[in-house]
Image (cartoon, rainbow, N blue to C red; front, side, top):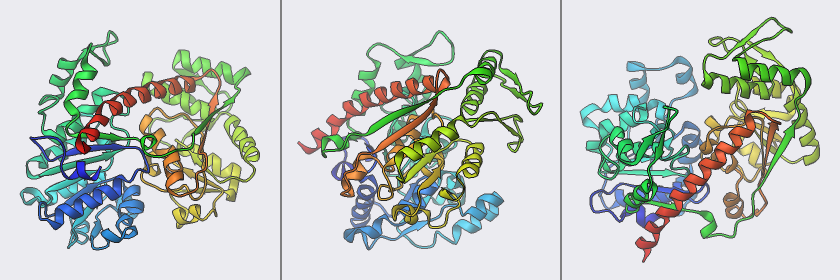
Length: 465
């Protein structure tokens, strides 16, 4: 990966994407590439765009773990909790940023603050290399992250993408990140041209499907600037075990679920509240909440919600007894999940956001149950020393969030740490519900992504030949 990161197979750009499984050392490879490019004055300053959790727990300290990176000066310019709460923008944001941008070879910013960095520097943009650690903000051509990176593209000599999941939801999501690398030379100048050239509209009018031969054509155009690395190709990894824990839902609850599913509406007799789904997207979300046991009843006020059942809490309690004291990461989705988890398990359960020194305490084995939201804490954390088990309290549509969360304790990290334990993932799932549809959908996305990975692996082989 390092040689490709320093010099790809392309003639028209120095930028590249390195898609590698979690735990394969993307961060240290990227830092080593930065160090060499800085040392030989091919670049002068680097900006890393990374989720705040990964920035604070990985990028801030990774260089300190390696002898050859001790001379690097990495500075965090991410928002603080106080700034997030106060919603710092404009002059306040600029003042906070400037105080942290003095000196340093590498600055690390969270996507939410990227706008402030772009506005602060303006035409005097100093970063000739930008590393994108997470492509969740590059799924859509009108996303804020994409537009901000596109704005400074003429002044950036090198873009480097380091991510484990290149296109979580299919090939349509690939265009923005490839455009950032080559300004449209491989997959057309606009997203509309990209769609027209390689896709056709589905009869439902909401999505596009690849034309015959499109996938092979797209893959072939990327092989000189993209590589994929899979831990299975280099290490003898333990098999990861996945278990679906079926949770029965019968009687009145089943009737209520089916009514909501059919009518987009449900009146709750117990507390007089109503559940209203104005559209399919909202309905899917309400059905997921129903499966977890509590539903928001007000579209604006998130403090208004009704408890429907404790089926999953009971199932989790039974599972914890079967695991006989193992430490467990609990993946939750809604604030109602976390509130009810805390109420049921009390001091046994810790919240990732509020537990002091949480990463070290978990890895020392001091926390038996650690609740984490995959969207905020599932990226870039090494948590394999504290346990090997993840329990999903609810179903998650996103392949990327599924993979990122599970790989906090995944097979690659187990081998690298010398533990070699078998990772175990448990999914609490209401029988005959939307959660089965979600599971099937995620599996299909995984197969599509595996196809892209296999195609661009040849780029690394050519580079090393």
